Image (cartoon, rainbow, N blue to C red):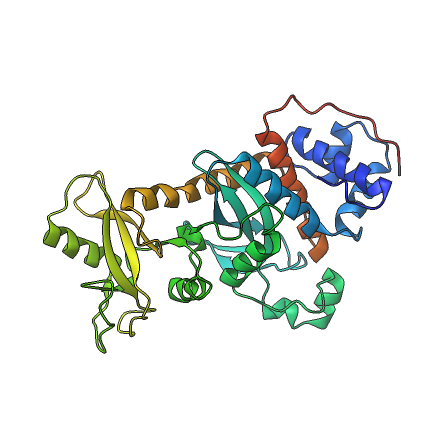
Length: 362
């Protein structure tokens, strides 16, 4: 994985850091990892130097992660995961105040956008981006201290996701795989769908019940000059009543998206998939997809892969130290996230436990 690193000491510390992430109980700080691996007293500083200051290119390792992932998965798709990395203080690169939607509380955190290759059983992380804003990119002193690249500008999460796909595609990794966005990753659905359609990408995006849509009588019908948007839930209920759909089979209907209630709908015709609730009369999950020739059951199965991605993120947070890096430097954050991803891949291979190895002081 890290054989491309030019220096012997870089390759050695990459190996050591991975072993530390895989075998250290509790928090994966460099001191705890060095203690677990029985390393010399100088090892914590060397590990910190390797992750935060050593100038190695993490994108090469991420391309290798993608190549390994796609070779071991059956009919993979791209999935996007979002992780909030809570921090104390204001010095961790990219940190901001953010509202955690599930809990409604305000948290001080970094926001990581992850790209995964996912099939029906496994979701493997391959690339990461840190969501940045003007408070960081517009402050020259903060940029200098965090070693933020000069060319970096704030981009929306959807642009970061597509940039990651473009970065890791190739060398046996097809860029044309479907893109699946879970509800927490569906930022500004209308603009996201428009951008994906412009690039002719197949996609499935989970949307809230309140998502404005305009039902379409026929997929090839021209967009009316005036059309009243309804919510995804309202449209699904009306369609079920009209077609007398029943049971737990997902409902499918052609729609156009509107950015907000009362706004004009776009021209692109998508398919709205609604999953009936098992306990109530209505629906409880909704997706829009560009894959109009694919059956609703198949789209639902593809969309549910975001649940597997969520499980991977939980495992990485609880067992592989995703939350344990202070992350004050921009390169250091990407180094740590890449190493944690490599550790997950190793764990996924279901090999023997990682042996403790002695590493000489750098």
